[in-house]
Length: 414
Image (tube, rainbow, N blue to C red; front, side, top):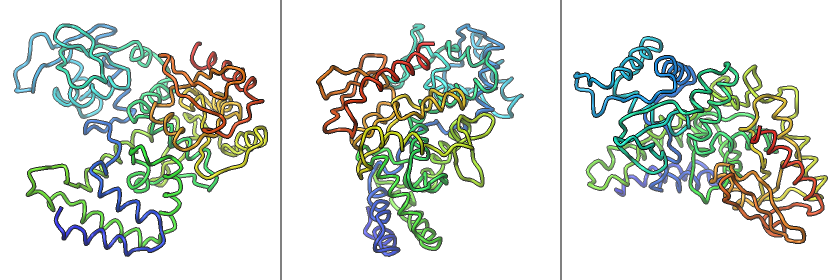
Protein backbone atom coordinates (compact mmCIF):
# COMPACT_ATOMS: atom_id res chain seq x y z
CA UNK A 1 0.00 0.00 0.00
CA UNK A 2 1.40 3.41 -0.96
CA UNK A 3 1.82 5.98 1.80
CA UNK A 4 -0.35 8.43 -0.12
CA UNK A 5 -3.31 6.07 0.41
CA UNK A 6 -3.19 6.67 4.14
CA UNK A 7 -4.20 10.29 3.67
CA UNK A 8 -7.70 9.08 2.81
CA UNK A 9 -7.90 7.10 6.06
CA UNK A 10 -6.69 10.21 7.88
CA UNK A 11 -9.49 12.18 6.25
CA UNK A 12 -12.01 9.67 7.61
CA UNK A 13 -10.40 9.81 11.05
CA UNK A 14 -10.80 13.59 11.12
CA UNK A 15 -14.51 13.53 10.28
CA UNK A 16 -15.50 12.86 13.90
CA UNK A 17 -13.36 12.34 17.00
CA UNK A 18 -15.88 10.55 19.19
CA UNK A 19 -17.68 8.08 16.98
CA UNK A 20 -17.02 4.32 17.09
CA UNK A 21 -18.04 3.90 13.47
CA UNK A 22 -14.99 5.91 12.35
CA UNK A 23 -12.49 3.51 13.91
CA UNK A 24 -14.53 0.56 12.68
CA UNK A 25 -14.70 1.58 9.00
CA UNK A 26 -10.97 2.41 8.93
CA UNK A 27 -10.21 -1.03 10.35
CA UNK A 28 -12.60 -2.69 7.91
CA UNK A 29 -11.24 -1.18 4.70
CA UNK A 30 -7.70 -1.85 5.93
CA UNK A 31 -8.57 -5.55 6.09
CA UNK A 32 -8.14 -7.74 3.02
CA UNK A 33 -11.63 -9.18 3.54
CA UNK A 34 -13.17 -5.71 3.72
CA UNK A 35 -15.92 -6.51 1.18
CA UNK A 36 -17.60 -8.93 3.53
CA UNK A 37 -20.18 -11.40 2.38
CA UNK A 38 -20.50 -12.06 -1.35
CA UNK A 39 -23.05 -14.36 -2.93
CA UNK A 40 -24.37 -14.34 -6.48
CA UNK A 41 -22.13 -14.79 -9.49
CA UNK A 42 -22.46 -11.33 -11.13
CA UNK A 43 -26.15 -12.12 -11.44
CA UNK A 44 -29.23 -10.06 -10.58
CA UNK A 45 -31.37 -12.92 -9.35
CA UNK A 46 -34.83 -11.40 -8.97
CA UNK A 47 -37.85 -13.45 -7.96
CA UNK A 48 -39.37 -12.85 -11.41
CA UNK A 49 -36.32 -14.18 -13.25
CA UNK A 50 -35.85 -17.09 -10.85
CA UNK A 51 -39.49 -18.21 -10.87
CA UNK A 52 -39.80 -17.87 -14.65
CA UNK A 53 -36.65 -19.93 -15.23
CA UNK A 54 -37.68 -22.73 -12.83
CA UNK A 55 -41.15 -22.92 -14.40
CA UNK A 56 -39.66 -23.04 -17.90
CA UNK A 57 -37.28 -25.83 -16.90
CA UNK A 58 -40.21 -27.78 -15.46
CA UNK A 59 -42.37 -27.11 -18.53
CA UNK A 60 -39.69 -28.36 -20.95
CA UNK A 61 -37.77 -30.99 -18.95
CA UNK A 62 -40.15 -31.90 -16.10
CA UNK A 63 -38.15 -33.99 -13.59
CA UNK A 64 -35.64 -35.23 -16.20
CA UNK A 65 -31.90 -34.63 -16.12
CA UNK A 66 -30.65 -32.93 -19.31
CA UNK A 67 -27.25 -32.14 -20.78
CA UNK A 68 -26.02 -28.56 -20.91
CA UNK A 69 -23.61 -26.84 -23.30
CA UNK A 70 -20.08 -27.77 -22.17
CA UNK A 71 -17.42 -25.07 -22.43
CA UNK A 72 -17.88 -21.53 -23.72
CA UNK A 73 -20.38 -20.83 -26.46
CA UNK A 74 -18.51 -20.38 -29.75
CA UNK A 75 -21.58 -20.40 -31.96
CA UNK A 76 -21.47 -24.16 -32.57
CA UNK A 77 -24.40 -26.06 -31.05
CA UNK A 78 -23.76 -29.37 -29.33
CA UNK A 79 -26.06 -32.18 -30.43
CA UNK A 80 -26.88 -33.45 -26.94
CA UNK A 81 -27.78 -30.03 -25.46
CA UNK A 82 -30.93 -29.08 -27.42
CA UNK A 83 -33.16 -29.23 -24.35
CA UNK A 84 -30.84 -26.72 -22.70
CA UNK A 85 -30.88 -24.44 -25.76
CA UNK A 86 -34.69 -24.53 -25.79
CA UNK A 87 -34.75 -23.48 -22.14
CA UNK A 88 -32.30 -20.63 -22.74
CA UNK A 89 -34.28 -19.40 -25.76
CA UNK A 90 -37.55 -19.42 -23.85
CA UNK A 91 -36.18 -17.65 -20.77
CA UNK A 92 -34.68 -14.96 -23.01
CA UNK A 93 -38.00 -14.55 -24.80
CA UNK A 94 -39.90 -14.31 -21.51
CA UNK A 95 -37.53 -12.08 -19.51
CA UNK A 96 -35.34 -10.46 -22.13
CA UNK A 97 -32.07 -11.80 -20.80
CA UNK A 98 -30.15 -15.06 -20.59
CA UNK A 99 -27.47 -16.57 -22.80
CA UNK A 100 -26.00 -20.06 -23.22
CA UNK A 101 -23.04 -18.99 -21.08
CA UNK A 102 -24.77 -16.83 -18.46
CA UNK A 103 -27.52 -19.28 -17.50
CA UNK A 104 -25.14 -22.16 -16.83
CA UNK A 105 -22.31 -20.07 -15.38
CA UNK A 106 -24.20 -17.51 -13.31
CA UNK A 107 -27.79 -18.59 -12.67
CA UNK A 108 -27.48 -22.36 -12.33
CA UNK A 109 -24.78 -22.20 -9.60
CA UNK A 110 -26.99 -19.89 -7.54
CA UNK A 111 -30.17 -21.93 -7.79
CA UNK A 112 -28.18 -25.12 -7.17
CA UNK A 113 -26.76 -23.64 -3.97
CA UNK A 114 -30.31 -22.66 -2.99
CA UNK A 115 -31.34 -26.31 -3.40
CA UNK A 116 -33.65 -26.02 -6.43
CA UNK A 117 -31.34 -27.61 -9.01
CA UNK A 118 -29.11 -30.67 -9.06
CA UNK A 119 -25.93 -30.55 -11.13
CA UNK A 120 -23.97 -33.58 -12.33
CA UNK A 121 -20.39 -34.26 -13.44
CA UNK A 122 -19.37 -36.07 -16.64
CA UNK A 123 -19.85 -39.45 -14.94
CA UNK A 124 -23.42 -38.62 -13.90
CA UNK A 125 -22.53 -38.14 -10.24
CA UNK A 126 -24.46 -35.47 -8.36
CA UNK A 127 -22.18 -32.57 -7.46
CA UNK A 128 -21.80 -31.50 -3.84
CA UNK A 129 -22.37 -27.73 -4.07
CA UNK A 130 -20.18 -27.05 -1.05
CA UNK A 131 -17.20 -29.06 -2.23
CA UNK A 132 -15.54 -26.58 -4.58
CA UNK A 133 -15.40 -26.21 -8.34
CA UNK A 134 -16.31 -29.14 -10.55
CA UNK A 135 -17.06 -29.60 -14.24
CA UNK A 136 -20.83 -29.63 -14.89
CA UNK A 137 -22.24 -31.70 -17.74
CA UNK A 138 -25.93 -32.06 -16.92
CA UNK A 139 -28.60 -30.65 -14.60
CA UNK A 140 -32.15 -31.31 -13.45
CA UNK A 141 -34.66 -29.81 -11.05
CA UNK A 142 -34.44 -31.13 -7.50
CA UNK A 143 -37.54 -32.18 -5.56
CA UNK A 144 -37.59 -28.67 -4.11
CA UNK A 145 -37.38 -27.19 -7.61
CA UNK A 146 -40.33 -29.27 -8.77
CA UNK A 147 -42.29 -28.28 -5.65
CA UNK A 148 -41.58 -24.63 -6.47
CA UNK A 149 -42.72 -25.01 -10.09
CA UNK A 150 -46.15 -26.37 -9.14
CA UNK A 151 -46.81 -24.15 -6.07
CA UNK A 152 -48.93 -21.02 -5.84
CA UNK A 153 -47.33 -17.57 -5.76
CA UNK A 154 -47.24 -17.19 -1.98
CA UNK A 155 -45.65 -20.62 -1.50
CA UNK A 156 -43.13 -19.80 -4.22
CA UNK A 157 -42.10 -16.57 -2.51
CA UNK A 158 -41.74 -18.46 0.77
CA UNK A 159 -39.54 -21.12 -0.85
CA UNK A 160 -37.54 -18.38 -2.57
CA UNK A 161 -37.02 -16.69 0.83
CA UNK A 162 -35.61 -19.91 2.28
CA UNK A 163 -33.31 -20.15 -0.72
CA UNK A 164 -32.15 -16.56 -0.21
CA UNK A 165 -31.26 -17.34 3.40
CA UNK A 166 -29.10 -20.23 2.18
CA UNK A 167 -27.55 -18.18 -0.63
CA UNK A 168 -26.76 -15.29 1.71
CA UNK A 169 -25.47 -17.58 4.47
CA UNK A 170 -28.16 -16.55 6.95
CA UNK A 171 -27.89 -12.82 6.26
CA UNK A 172 -31.66 -12.63 5.80
CA UNK A 173 -32.40 -14.22 9.18
CA UNK A 174 -29.76 -12.10 10.91
CA UNK A 175 -31.25 -8.86 9.58
CA UNK A 176 -34.77 -9.96 10.53
CA UNK A 177 -33.62 -10.58 14.09
CA UNK A 178 -31.91 -7.18 14.19
CA UNK A 179 -34.94 -5.27 12.89
CA UNK A 180 -37.49 -7.27 14.85
CA UNK A 181 -35.81 -7.42 18.25
CA UNK A 182 -33.76 -4.23 18.59
CA UNK A 183 -34.65 -1.80 21.39
CA UNK A 184 -33.55 1.35 19.56
CA UNK A 185 -36.40 1.97 17.16
CA UNK A 186 -34.39 0.82 14.14
CA UNK A 187 -37.04 -0.16 11.61
CA UNK A 188 -35.17 0.18 8.30
CA UNK A 189 -31.78 -0.35 6.67
CA UNK A 190 -30.52 1.55 3.66
CA UNK A 191 -28.05 0.26 1.08
CA UNK A 192 -25.05 2.22 2.41
CA UNK A 193 -25.70 1.05 5.97
CA UNK A 194 -25.84 -2.51 4.74
CA UNK A 195 -22.67 -2.03 2.68
CA UNK A 196 -20.59 -0.31 5.37
CA UNK A 197 -21.73 -2.31 8.41
CA UNK A 198 -24.21 -5.14 7.99
CA UNK A 199 -22.38 -6.94 5.17
CA UNK A 200 -19.38 -7.54 7.43
CA UNK A 201 -18.90 -11.30 7.79
CA UNK A 202 -15.80 -11.29 9.98
CA UNK A 203 -16.48 -13.60 12.89
CA UNK A 204 -15.34 -11.18 15.59
CA UNK A 205 -17.98 -8.64 14.53
CA UNK A 206 -21.19 -9.73 16.24
CA UNK A 207 -24.79 -8.81 15.51
CA UNK A 208 -24.78 -6.62 18.61
CA UNK A 209 -21.62 -4.88 17.36
CA UNK A 210 -23.37 -4.14 14.06
CA UNK A 211 -26.41 -2.76 15.85
CA UNK A 212 -24.30 -0.37 17.94
CA UNK A 213 -22.21 0.66 14.93
CA UNK A 214 -25.40 1.39 13.00
CA UNK A 215 -26.51 3.71 15.80
CA UNK A 216 -23.12 5.43 15.74
CA UNK A 217 -23.28 5.86 11.96
CA UNK A 218 -26.72 7.43 12.24
CA UNK A 219 -25.34 9.99 14.70
CA UNK A 220 -23.23 11.44 11.89
CA UNK A 221 -24.54 14.38 9.90
CA UNK A 222 -25.33 14.11 6.19
CA UNK A 223 -22.18 16.12 5.43
CA UNK A 224 -20.01 13.85 7.60
CA UNK A 225 -21.42 10.77 5.88
CA UNK A 226 -20.69 12.32 2.49
CA UNK A 227 -17.10 13.08 3.55
CA UNK A 228 -16.61 9.47 4.64
CA UNK A 229 -18.00 8.14 1.36
CA UNK A 230 -15.75 10.37 -0.74
CA UNK A 231 -12.68 9.30 1.24
CA UNK A 232 -13.66 5.61 0.97
CA UNK A 233 -14.13 5.95 -2.78
CA UNK A 234 -10.65 7.44 -3.07
CA UNK A 235 -9.04 4.85 -0.80
CA UNK A 236 -10.88 1.96 -2.48
CA UNK A 237 -9.84 2.97 -6.00
CA UNK A 238 -8.33 -0.09 -7.74
CA UNK A 239 -6.03 2.10 -9.82
CA UNK A 240 -4.18 3.09 -6.64
CA UNK A 241 -2.43 -0.29 -6.47
CA UNK A 242 -2.77 -1.66 -9.99
CA UNK A 243 1.03 -1.73 -10.32
CA UNK A 244 1.25 -4.50 -7.68
CA UNK A 245 1.77 -8.12 -8.73
CA UNK A 246 -0.11 -9.20 -5.60
CA UNK A 247 -3.81 -8.33 -6.03
CA UNK A 248 -4.70 -8.90 -2.36
CA UNK A 249 -4.20 -5.25 -1.33
CA UNK A 250 -6.53 -4.01 -4.09
CA UNK A 251 -9.68 -2.19 -3.00
CA UNK A 252 -12.66 -1.53 -5.27
CA UNK A 253 -15.51 0.61 -3.94
CA UNK A 254 -17.72 0.01 -6.99
CA UNK A 255 -17.48 -3.79 -6.75
CA UNK A 256 -18.09 -3.60 -3.01
CA UNK A 257 -21.25 -1.56 -3.55
CA UNK A 258 -22.44 -3.72 -6.48
CA UNK A 259 -22.16 -6.85 -4.32
CA UNK A 260 -24.11 -5.16 -1.54
CA UNK A 261 -26.80 -4.06 -4.00
CA UNK A 262 -27.02 -7.63 -5.27
CA UNK A 263 -27.78 -8.99 -1.79
CA UNK A 264 -30.06 -6.04 -1.01
CA UNK A 265 -32.03 -6.90 -4.15
CA UNK A 266 -32.31 -10.56 -3.13
CA UNK A 267 -33.59 -9.62 0.32
CA UNK A 268 -36.18 -7.27 -1.19
CA UNK A 269 -37.69 -10.22 -3.07
CA UNK A 270 -38.49 -12.21 0.08
CA UNK A 271 -41.33 -12.69 2.55
CA UNK A 272 -39.02 -11.08 5.13
CA UNK A 273 -38.51 -7.67 3.56
CA UNK A 274 -39.81 -5.06 1.18
CA UNK A 275 -38.23 -1.84 -0.07
CA UNK A 276 -39.87 1.53 0.48
CA UNK A 277 -38.06 4.77 -0.40
CA UNK A 278 -34.90 2.74 -1.07
CA UNK A 279 -34.98 1.37 2.48
CA UNK A 280 -35.29 -2.26 3.49
CA UNK A 281 -38.12 -2.78 6.01
CA UNK A 282 -39.99 -5.78 7.40
CA UNK A 283 -42.56 -7.11 4.92
CA UNK A 284 -46.07 -6.50 6.21
CA UNK A 285 -47.64 -6.76 2.75
CA UNK A 286 -49.82 -9.50 1.28
CA UNK A 287 -46.75 -11.71 0.70
CA UNK A 288 -45.04 -10.80 3.97
CA UNK A 289 -45.02 -12.74 7.22
CA UNK A 290 -45.19 -9.78 9.60
CA UNK A 291 -48.32 -8.12 10.97
CA UNK A 292 -48.21 -4.32 10.72
CA UNK A 293 -50.70 -4.04 13.59
CA UNK A 294 -48.45 -5.80 16.10
CA UNK A 295 -45.71 -4.17 18.11
CA UNK A 296 -42.65 -5.87 16.67
CA UNK A 297 -41.14 -8.29 19.14
CA UNK A 298 -42.16 -6.26 22.18
CA UNK A 299 -44.46 -8.79 23.87
CA UNK A 300 -42.18 -11.80 23.38
CA UNK A 301 -39.17 -9.82 24.62
CA UNK A 302 -41.01 -8.45 27.63
CA UNK A 303 -42.37 -11.91 28.46
CA UNK A 304 -38.88 -13.42 28.22
CA UNK A 305 -37.26 -10.99 30.66
CA UNK A 306 -40.21 -11.21 33.06
CA UNK A 307 -40.58 -15.00 33.01
CA UNK A 308 -36.85 -15.73 33.21
CA UNK A 309 -36.26 -13.02 35.80
CA UNK A 310 -33.33 -11.48 33.92
CA UNK A 311 -32.38 -7.96 32.88
CA UNK A 312 -31.04 -6.68 29.59
CA UNK A 313 -27.26 -6.69 29.44
CA UNK A 314 -24.66 -5.36 27.05
CA UNK A 315 -23.01 -8.19 25.15
CA UNK A 316 -26.09 -10.41 24.92
CA UNK A 317 -28.51 -11.04 22.03
CA UNK A 318 -31.99 -12.54 22.00
CA UNK A 319 -32.12 -15.48 19.60
CA UNK A 320 -35.14 -17.24 18.10
CA UNK A 321 -34.44 -20.98 18.42
CA UNK A 322 -36.77 -21.78 15.52
CA UNK A 323 -36.01 -18.99 13.00
CA UNK A 324 -38.53 -16.82 11.18
CA UNK A 325 -37.44 -18.47 7.94
CA UNK A 326 -39.73 -21.39 8.81
CA UNK A 327 -42.85 -19.19 8.90
CA UNK A 328 -45.14 -19.49 5.88
CA UNK A 329 -47.59 -16.78 6.92
CA UNK A 330 -48.36 -14.19 9.58
CA UNK A 331 -49.96 -16.76 11.89
CA UNK A 332 -46.83 -18.93 11.75
CA UNK A 333 -44.75 -15.89 12.68
CA UNK A 334 -46.75 -15.46 15.89
CA UNK A 335 -45.93 -19.05 16.91
CA UNK A 336 -42.23 -18.38 16.35
CA UNK A 337 -42.29 -15.02 18.15
CA UNK A 338 -43.04 -16.52 21.57
CA UNK A 339 -40.84 -16.09 24.64
CA UNK A 340 -40.56 -19.90 24.90
CA UNK A 341 -38.79 -19.84 21.53
CA UNK A 342 -36.23 -17.28 22.70
CA UNK A 343 -32.92 -17.56 24.50
CA UNK A 344 -30.72 -14.65 25.63
CA UNK A 345 -27.21 -15.55 24.51
CA UNK A 346 -23.78 -14.02 24.88
CA UNK A 347 -22.66 -12.39 21.64
CA UNK A 348 -19.98 -15.02 21.04
CA UNK A 349 -22.41 -17.89 21.50
CA UNK A 350 -25.06 -16.19 19.39
CA UNK A 351 -22.48 -15.92 16.59
CA UNK A 352 -22.14 -19.73 16.58
CA UNK A 353 -25.82 -20.04 15.72
CA UNK A 354 -25.52 -17.38 13.02
CA UNK A 355 -22.49 -19.04 11.45
CA UNK A 356 -24.29 -22.40 11.41
CA UNK A 357 -27.20 -20.86 9.50
CA UNK A 358 -29.64 -21.11 12.45
CA UNK A 359 -30.01 -24.84 11.75
CA UNK A 360 -29.46 -25.92 15.36
CA UNK A 361 -33.10 -25.91 16.37
CA UNK A 362 -33.67 -29.08 18.42
CA UNK A 363 -33.30 -28.52 22.16
CA UNK A 364 -31.96 -31.35 24.31
CA UNK A 365 -30.88 -31.35 27.95
CA UNK A 366 -30.39 -33.58 30.95
CA UNK A 367 -31.92 -32.78 34.33
CA UNK A 368 -29.44 -31.21 36.77
CA UNK A 369 -26.96 -30.52 33.95
CA UNK A 370 -26.52 -26.83 33.06
CA UNK A 371 -25.50 -27.65 29.48
CA UNK A 372 -28.11 -27.41 26.75
CA UNK A 373 -27.56 -29.03 23.36
CA UNK A 374 -29.04 -27.44 20.26
CA UNK A 375 -28.98 -30.11 17.57
CA UNK A 376 -29.43 -29.85 13.83
CA UNK A 377 -30.94 -32.66 11.77
CA UNK A 378 -27.48 -34.09 11.02
CA UNK A 379 -26.82 -34.60 14.76
CA UNK A 380 -24.30 -31.76 14.96
CA UNK A 381 -24.77 -29.59 18.01
CA UNK A 382 -23.99 -26.29 19.71
CA UNK A 383 -23.50 -26.41 23.48
CA UNK A 384 -24.93 -23.65 25.66
CA UNK A 385 -24.12 -23.50 29.37
CA UNK A 386 -27.01 -21.63 30.95
CA UNK A 387 -24.73 -20.53 33.79
CA UNK A 388 -22.09 -18.92 31.55
CA UNK A 389 -23.41 -18.61 27.96
CA UNK A 390 -26.97 -17.41 28.51
CA UNK A 391 -29.30 -15.59 30.88
CA UNK A 392 -31.99 -18.20 31.29
CA UNK A 393 -34.09 -19.69 34.11
CA UNK A 394 -33.51 -23.40 34.52
CA UNK A 395 -36.98 -23.71 36.08
CA UNK A 396 -38.50 -22.95 32.66
CA UNK A 397 -36.59 -25.68 30.79
CA UNK A 398 -39.47 -28.20 30.75
CA UNK A 399 -41.94 -25.73 29.22
CA UNK A 400 -39.35 -24.41 26.75
CA UNK A 401 -38.52 -27.98 25.75
CA UNK A 402 -42.20 -28.83 25.32
CA UNK A 403 -42.76 -25.75 23.16
CA UNK A 404 -39.65 -26.58 21.11
CA UNK A 405 -41.01 -30.07 20.41
CA UNK A 406 -44.32 -28.52 19.31
CA UNK A 407 -42.57 -26.14 16.89
CA UNK A 408 -40.31 -28.88 15.52
CA UNK A 409 -43.35 -30.98 14.65
CA UNK A 410 -45.19 -27.99 13.21
CA UNK A 411 -42.40 -26.56 11.05
CA UNK A 412 -40.07 -29.47 10.26
CA UNK A 413 -41.92 -32.78 10.51
CA UNK A 414 -45.17 -31.98 8.72
